[in-house]
Image (tube, rainbow, N blue to C red; front, side, top):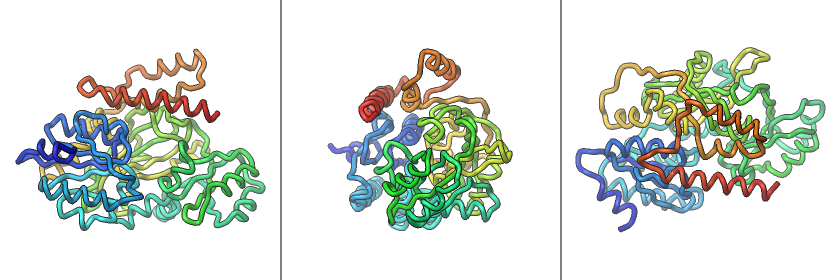
Length: 398
């Protein structure tokens, strides 16, 4: 019996099953919160990450999406046609682009809320996103968009360092930048050489100032918007630590109320006529006393588990919305709820002395786990093993 047959066997009449594209910690949170309610979950990905080891989902490995999208369409056609109507959730930028591009075909069997393909492409392209944000009166970091190496040489003269070299579209440059999402240039010569190494006609890079401040100056809005581009629920989260430091993913975060962040995020999403789950990140610029837009994601991120712990279970909210169930007129959430991504936060220990390790341990006081779960232990076991291998690889490359 293959994975699809096993999942179909678990599907029962009267319960709408769910299909998840992607298997990272955001997918793990969705799978657990659906599976614990008796909802059969099928998870599709080309790599088996944390969510792929959950007992609450049936995992199936497919070819890389960029290399063979037809295999994904065929599998979704099979799953949808044989199970009846399903809920569809996307967990990565690449999956979001795929679902938006093939939305008409997918709508035959699946219920989902996603922006149209033009909006998805605008959000994922930081140059387009920043232009839209500025038109809506939302501050962005000082950024230049060189068209050629000669432009970089000119821009490097007289500018302050360090600065950032970032791709317009993150997922399109992941292989060349792996394991990082960007490059920090400390000198003019490094900026020029890194640009020459990384930028291509199909994958342009931009130069951006580094806004002063630590990881705790970064705030994130997470929200769900309906088909009429109206906010159903929203929450603000503050990063306390991330990996890699300053420019990575949040590994220790806490829920907050920050009207400055929430108001700016709403203004941006309204300007985009956004639909679905969104994640919008800002950094507080103490020099100018304002929040600056860093990036946005047209999908769920790992912060959905944090939101659920604070009383906003976006997986259940979106499921009930898509199945036509009535939702409350408004949602609240608790502040001060702290979560740690154990797998990624372990990586922040690398290179710390004894005093640093003690501070790290103290910072975890009161934090809830994103990955560990008594009824679903295998994702944490695999996560610790991946973290150990990642540290070893970094040591080998050092």
